[in-house]
Length: 189
Image (cartoon, rainbow, N blue to C red; front, side, top):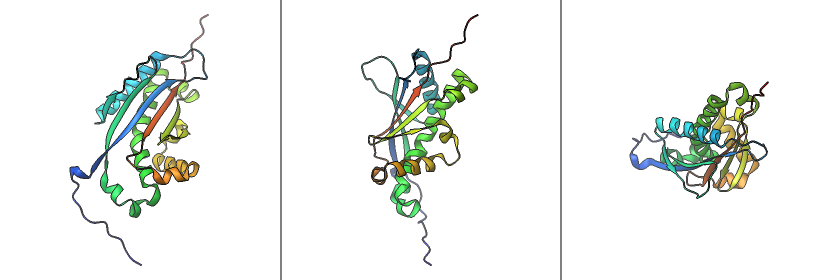
């Protein structure tokens, strides 16, 4: 049995690679009474939490009102990509992508829960669509909070889009979109 030993390499700045994620929040199209203030508040809270953890945020101007749209820039280890065959075979690009976007989604979900409350957040969660090079999957909030979420999402994406999964890299065009449901209004008596 042959043992593969990973070289003992000091990590250098040239081993880091940028991953740019387009992060968008919109109102849920299927609901009446959209709440643009809630969308903006959740977007701001998410961005602030990510900036505190060292993420770089770039605003995107689209020339229209409504929604929340930014680019999130983070660095991934080039070392992982260089040795992806030995580390995780075909899913390494996906695991890297999902492992990088999970914190963004978690911050968005936390911001939503803080704004609308735990109960409403659980009964009326944000719908999340993740696109990699234009190929989407829909994700439920409970999938994100599980311990092995990035691997599970990579496997889910691979099973739905096997050809696209093999082509996914840290240079792929990655987009995360959350559809924020309107707040439930309390009825006045």
